[in-house]
Length: 340
Image (cartoon, rainbow, N blue to C red; front, side, top):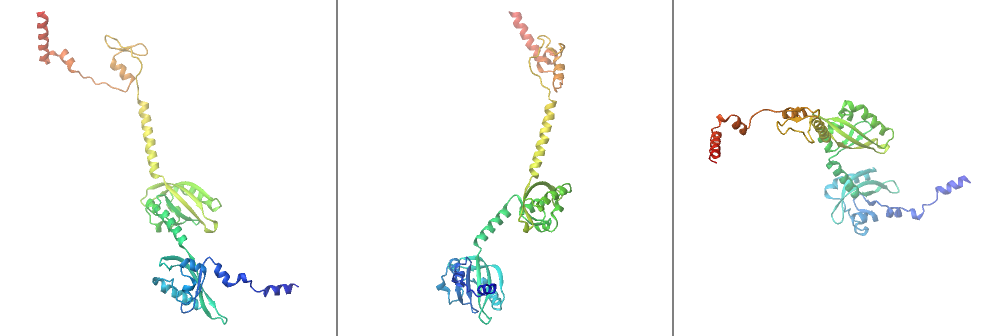
């Protein structure tokens, strides 16, 4: 019984719903076949949708989708296919009916006849327009970001760095990727940095770390890393790195200024409240009840210091001989008083 079942399975015909025509028509990839002269033998609905030509327009004619600047490349693949070789998917450019160009992935396989000869080349085409758009946007983000972006292998080497990384460390991308990235880590931070990255190797999905990297000119940059592990089979992690060097310098200057101001405030002595002062000699009574000269009191209660000089009014009063005008004023005053 088992033999009959096996025999029946081996010789069961392919159902009609699995016929080659059904598969070709249902394929999301554009598919067409050419003979050795380049005449179109097959053109599926996905090819109609992608390139704009209907089956009726292209069958029996030369393939219209190859641009002039890619003809040699296309003919080379076609020749290999008719020699029985399969071509791996390769990115190329083809032309639509409206003459616009489209980026595609193209592969070709030989189709053999009953006696084993290659009778046609079957092309499988995948539209890469959306993928190209995504790659372009990702490339713009990577290239234009002011943050430092990098891709690092679990082997400890940079695989890719963005221009901001190059500007910050002053090494070329090639220099950065040619040696283990730990070479650029400050010696004081190497141990802790490798410990954190080992967590990614052992299964953690993301980590945050701070360290210092040494630039080509010997200066040191203070960096904050946010690292995300790629799927395990890729053996990579992606990092967004914020350069905090300038912020740290500003913060250090701010702390220094605060410290200086605190010292200055601590050294300031102030006077407030009501001061008891003699109405005659102008001495001031201190907290212990002792009468003190004004200069002595102020010097003892503030950081002010006195230098002695003499004002003009006192000079006239104390040294009238040096001021003739004071004599004239006195004489005039005496005359006025005597007259009255």
